[in-house]
Length: 529
Image: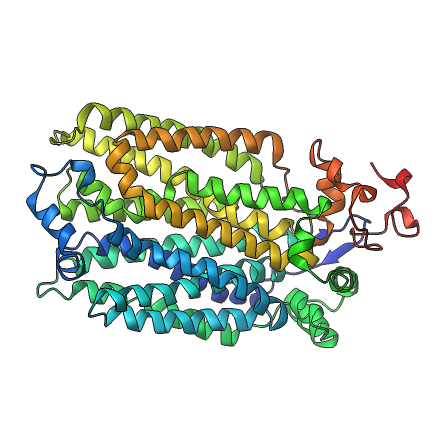
């Protein structure tokens, strides 16, 4: 398990780091937070396609679906704000919880934050599985949302901080891998529970979310706190001991000195959120926000949430539609494995650009087929075309799963300097959930109004984001987190101009990373690029 390795720092010092079993185990435990998130995303689409569930909570939709295409357009039968609220209340709650989570990650540490998430998840699951009315159902979803807010804040940070630099990308993607496994698991569960006679299948689907919830809670009790977090809270000896343990070597002085320096700078910052808005933090902020918006505008969640609904709209029977959703779920998991393997080898940019081409192409093809074949009231999608649609959706999902999916979380968590890292991660999660909410809330209505054009809408976004990556996203593979400012931002053709300290509204002494060339505070203009 353990393999030696060095992470190079900008001043030529190498951090010694073995890949220790404790790191691997901690990361696997922590990443179960992703399993929970994925299960919640996957389960809601399948449950909302179950007649018993619709009959109990959404009789209006149930009547529409039963009445079939003669009364309502194919594209519109699921268009109902209440039904969309069931899915999206989770994201609104997560959005609000993120701000509290930012505070707990900073003051209590990454590990207690994961524990809080686990507790929220467990209570939410119980409420959902036992729901007797819509209020109970939505309350459960809201608690699950709070869990998502706390988990998505703590887990990516935990993973980035505990992983040695050279496999940081791969370990961080464990979070996203677990999201995809969660979605697949949810699809398989729905496939099984949809067959249960007696109308309680949906309770089982919602209740099985308890499995990942327990895994996360137990995991949070077992893992160690990250050295960065211990140092940040002034527990230096403990921090050093943990660093020795996770790096598998006694020679941790250089890395520990780096942590101390980063932490000292972070302490000088009294208002992390206000600090985020400063000029020199703008590149990281812009990129983190843009990546989250773009990740949602690929249209992936729309397809993942509503895969069963989408396929049954396209005229697959309800069994076939769950089956197709399982296929896309499996593709999702396998492609995320591709990215774990390649992200620290070929780099972040290559993956994003290649996937842009693949996603654009497959969405245009889907739109053309649907435009010709699926009209409002007829579904003459022959076997061949139906298979082609599934293949294209798989091509699209595969591209997303090795690019925007994992990297949308990885890149922000590794680019923020320590002083704004919790705040930055909060903004990242918050923007992500806000846009997930908007798209979850709007998707079924958009499907109703845009018809097949919805795929063209998303594909035009894919074009925009590929240009953004090409010109504005720097490569961050194999660069230690605390060295980003010096080695990435100051050398970028566009972002370098934001790194001049004397432009800053208020200059903290030495806050901006390393002292350059040993000059007093590194503010001598001659030392700047």
